[in-house]
Length: 154
Ligand SMILES: [Zn+2]
Ligand SMILES: [Zn+2]
Image (cartoon, rainbow, N blue to C red; front, side, top):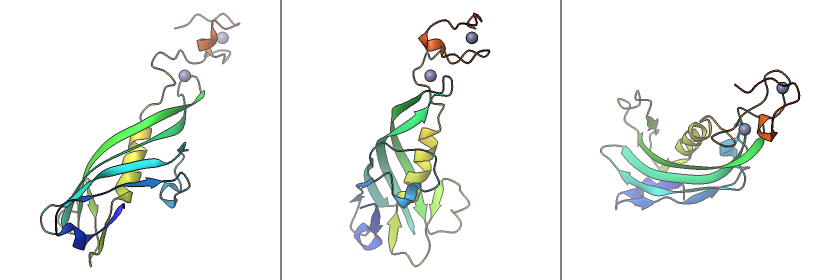
């Protein structure tokens, strides 16, 4: 469950676990095609008045396009997440705090998953660390060898 009933949280930490399919509405509008579901785990617990701390993690695989050679490839995405959810308006100015609205019935960790997922996959994707990219002149993929135009590799 990625939506936790606050009554459950009165008794102590609650395990959050779930799978989000690529077609889940949560990912709507994101230009990040998931290969298979995103697996989410973690623990949610109370932290002060109207506040909850989520120590979570997610993992999955996404299709990316290499920034250098424009080849499409699949890369694993794995991320630990530590975020606060709070119904306290004083805390909601803090951009790292996810707001909850009163009356408090559920804590939904999915908005945090969405945001942290976007941050995790927007990191500069390269098909491999030493990708040589494309020739700036003829556009040939320099990973495949020296191009025909003969422009020396930089
Ligand atoms: Zn590349
Ligand atoms: Zn060339």
